[in-house]
Image (cartoon, rainbow, N blue to C red; front, top):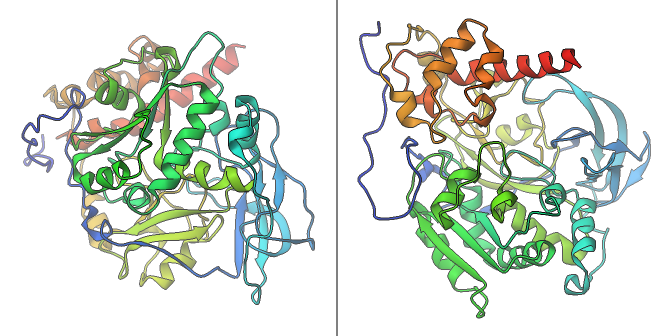
Length: 457
């Protein structure tokens, strides 16, 4: 049995603001970058554009080695409804189509683009259009043509999310500006610096889905963002801003729905089943920017932060930029062993400095090597039935029970205890005094159940 408790933060006193039951309060550590405006980094010499950087089928290349492309030009097409196209983030020459490393390890096909060093990198592809004249079906098609996916991390195709079943009427759009993951400040800066685009994108989503109102939600540690948005709200009252309690994982769909409009999304159902559409701030801002100009996703804002980097900040970078290029410019000298793509709760350690920025990459966390090494030798102990994981789980699951079943490889019985409802937020692992890697257990269990289901067919 461990001799010391897993370090956790003390419970945050009640604020009187709306929130959800359970959850945790890890240190947010947003002070590194919250006050730093978005700046553009230089273009690298070469971009690595993964054909599979979204949920669904990979894009299909429409270019060949040696072909010249201009910034914004489509270079890969969508392969069906559950797919999106890919656009050239820079003017240059297609070098080759080959395998490339990913943040999770396995290599996937990618387009390698050599950036033209003397080019101004002006966006030459696209033309202005009146989005107000498009019908909902045309807007959704335009969303797919732009290659838009959930930029909050899930990378789920946005046009699919905007196409609920015919019997689901969406009356309210929720815009997630909570950004509850520690360290990350991408959405915070976008709300502060580009609130007009956020409102424009929200209105486009409302029009496409036939929603009567929208609520932009942000946590109490970003009240300045709420004030910036309120200054540009439309006078008809169709869009409002609500500040909720700072707590993790406040930005998850089910938690956000409860905190903002007091609706509960049933187990196994989507937000549209209760009349909601939920979208991330970064995605919404891109919709407001790209659709009026008929352009595709070619760059995104990434928070590069943590005590292991000399110049943390929020940076606008082309999709496909290698992590090593970014980090060398910001004062990092180490190895991929000490990098996390995303935040500390749900992010992934990267396998190589050659891993490129993807559409879903909102942050690069750089801890100090000694911080990682301090965690490495932690010994795992048996469950002591303390109940902390049960008290922390935002979906009111029983992680301790699921963990015991997983340890015994009882994967199928776990389905009877709502395993698939778990979205791997990490609250249970965070509070476990026995250092049991519960989230890793659940990921393996889900994978095994999918394999068993496929084998049964």
